[in-house]
Amino acid sequence: MKNRRSFIKKTAAFSLAGMLSLSKNAAAGEIQIKGALIHHVYFWLKEPENEDHKKELISGLKKLLKVKTIKMSHIGVPAGTESRDVVDHSYSVSYMVMFDNQAGQDAYQVDPIHTKFVDDYSHLWKKVIVYDSID
Image 1: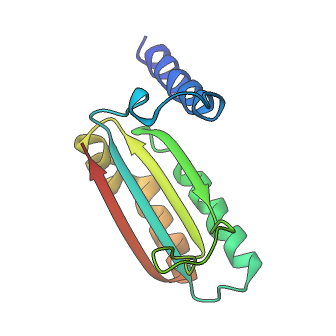
Image 2: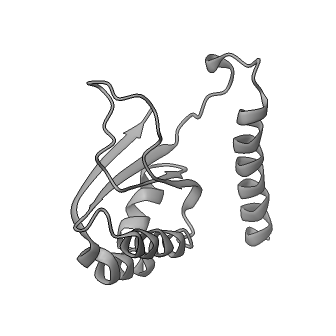
């Protein structure tokens, strides 16, 4: 029963994420994420021009998504948006995951999948910055 509830919850979350791009007429205040912890991680590769290293890191991040407390995710690279003083395009890969709450993020930090990711892929990056937020 727990797996079914988890599946339904994840399906609803991903459906919501899909609807966000389709609901062009919705005001920002109409769709809100309450109580969740958002975990943003930015990676700067040691060799930023090395596409194989970038692919390897992204592959590792996809494996990391198997941590059970993750509810939503996004893995990306810098967008081709305009250069402005407030826009930072200097990172190589971004990783964003959402947890139901602080406890979910705490469990993620010590999950063997997460610790293995750090052990297996940390040789690729020179810098990591994390931004966590909760409402």
